[in-house]
Image (cartoon, rainbow, N blue to C red):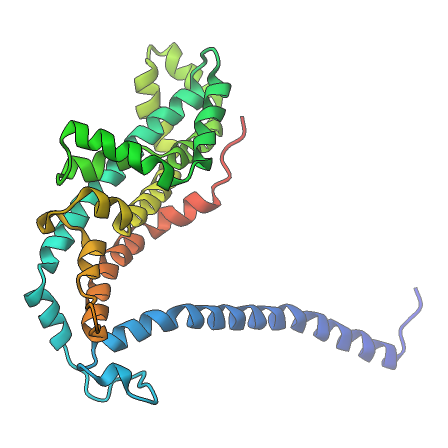
Length: 293
């Protein structure tokens, strides 16, 4: 191998330095893009908090003030005094928590039947069940309302909760997770004398906890933000959820945006708390590829 001249050695070293700098530059560019994207997404939330701290009339000042010159908490006091926000909050918590628990239970049980049990027409039945996702929600609301009325569940918690406990998407999500569980674990459990319920509860559920938490977060957020179904089922203000309660903050001729934004901030806080509590499992569930059989 021929010895390199000093000029060739210098060129080689400069090329090495350039190659070492490229990953650093890419990483810096990547983080800059993330910061820009996060800032764009945070601006509406920060503006919401800023508006909730402005006195009446300051929301329409031009040019708009991102940081209130005279911040006040009067809007939060007014929204809790003039409207039963704590009652709305409690109703939303009850409905969202029970809906989430019910959907996690029923979706995982149905998913076990479709993924781990063998019966005639199983796959065809699942495809038919999956096809119902193509039916718009507005089409099924009238039959659901008629059933709820016949059961006498109008203006009641069962009318708000029970119809939303069953979801095709949850069953599909849980089924895909259970398909990744090795058959050997199931067969070993059956050889030890376990039945299907024991296999479901002691073998399958512990292995799909991240995906179960992901379904829980999706269901909680969907139930918490649901406006149309409570609007149809509930006419009693004592059973109204937060989305219905927030609609009361909008005036007929004019809207106090500071009052409105204070109510929105109150409604967003529980979702943030739930996400921060379960974000570890949410990330695991979204990135989980499953074990191969």
